[in-house]
Image (cartoon, rainbow, N blue to C red; front, side, top):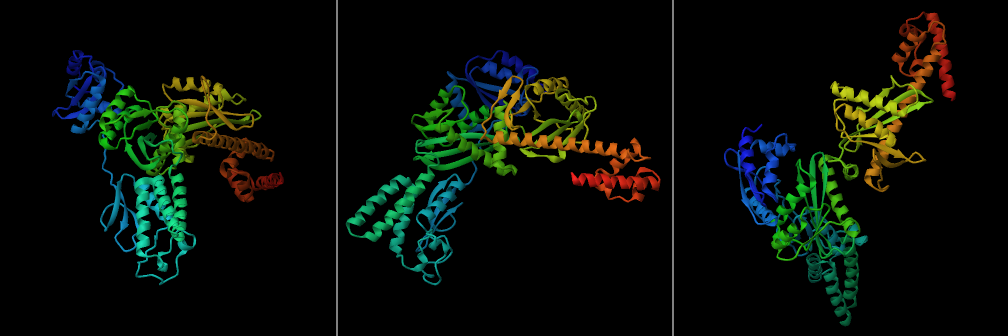
Length: 614
C-alpha cells in the first residue's frame, strides 16, 4: 500500500469541485498520469479512498503516486483540450498512449520505358510515387485493382528488349493484360494509359470516367474509332471497379468509421477512412488495457485526431456513445477548422459500415492470436448479448443425460477461445441422485465441480470458467446460480434453450430469454456448444448403460460374481476387446479356473454375436 495515501487524502479533501486537469507524479516528480474531470475533488478522491476497487493498471499507478498537481479550467471542454495537449507533451507512462510508429506504403510507377505499377513499403527504387498511404492492405489492393482495370503488365519481362521474343502469357488471353510483349503498343499510347491510371488513383472513379468520356467523344468526332472503342471499354472497367470500391453504397461521402474488438485481454481499434464515397484507407491499433471500452475509445480519439488535424473528416461514426459528446465535436471542429459531427447509429446503413469496421478489427485480432475472425466475432457478440464485461475466453457447458431413469450422467465440455478444448472435458456419474431429476442432477454435478476447484485439484478443475452454460431453460439457471453463490464465486450462468425440434432457440437467464439473430456468429457458436455437450453426455450415458448390461450378463456364468465381472470390465473396457481374449487370459484376469474361463469365453462370444446382429 502507498504510505503517502493519508497525506494525499488530506490534500484532496480541500480540493476544488471545479472542472480541470490533474497530474499525478511519482517520488522523482515525474508525471506518470494525466486526467481530466468535471469535478476535480470527486474524481481525484476516487483514486485514494479506502477499499477502492481499481483495475490492476490504476492500482499500480496509485501505488506510485507521491503527489499531484492540478489545473482548474472554466469548463469541462477546456479540461478536455488541456488534457489532450498535456498528454501529447509529457507522454505519461500510465496513460493510454497512441503509438503512431507504423510505416507508410506507396504506389510506385517504375522508371522504365513501359512503367509497371507496384505497392512499395519505401522509396528505395527509382520511379514516380503516389502516397504515402497508412494502410499497406489498401495500397496493395489499389495496385491490384488498377493493374486489372487498365490491363497493365505484371510479368517480369523487359520492354522493349523482349518484344515478340515469346508468346503472350495467359493474362493476355483472359484479358487481364494488354499484351505489351507483342510490340504493338507505342510508348506514347502506353504513357497515355499510365496517365489515366494515375488520374484514376488520384481523383477516383467518378472524375476519371467523366474525363475519359470527354476524350472518347473527342476521338469519335475525329473519326478515331479505334481509340474511342478502347476508351469505351476502359470506362466500363473503371465504372465497374468503382462500384465495388464503394463497398456498400455512396451515401457515406467523407467519414471515419471506428469500431473496436477485444480478445484475450487485447483490444483492437479499426478505423475505416472513407473519402469521395469510397474506402480510401484503413488503420488498426492494438492496446493491452484493463479499462472499459468507453474509456479506451475516449483516450484514443483525442490522441488520434490530435495527430491528424488536417485530415479529420466531416463525420466520425462510432459504435460507442461518448459522455458529453458535444465537447468532443467542439474539440475536433477546432482541430479541423470546420464543423465535425459524431454519429452513433443504432440501425440502418451506418450500422453496416460499423459492422464492416468491427469485422476488420476481429480479423486483425484473429491474425494476432491464430484464431479465425468468426471465432473472435462470435465471442465478442456473445459477451455483449449476455452483458459480460469481456468476451468469455474460457467457458463450460453442462448437459444431463439418462435412459429411463437409469445411467444418470452429466457431461461437461469446455470451449477455449471459441474452440473445443477436449482434454478439459469431464464426465460426472450421479452418486446422490439416481432418479430422473435434471435440476438435482445438475446441482450435484456443479457442486462436485466447484469443490474440485476449491481443493485446487490439478486434473482440469483448477481453472474457473468465464461463463457457465446449461442445456436447459430458466429453471436450470435458477437451480444453479445459488450453488455458485454458496461457493462465494461470481460466474455468469445462462441456459441454452431449444425449440420443439431440439434446435437452439435462445439464451435463458433468471429474468427471461435473450434472443440472438440466427445469422449471427454468436448464435452459430451457441448451437455448436449445445450440440457438442449433448453429444458428449449422451455418449457417456450409452457407454455406462452398455457396461451395466454387460456386467449383468457376465454374472449369468457360473462362478462369475459381481466383483469378478467388475474386474473384467475394468481391465478390457469394452466387450469387443474382451471377445479377443483367450480362455487362459480370461482366467488370469478374473482369477477363476480354466473350466469357468472356457464357459465365460463361450458366453462372451455369444454376447458379441448378438451385438453384431443388432
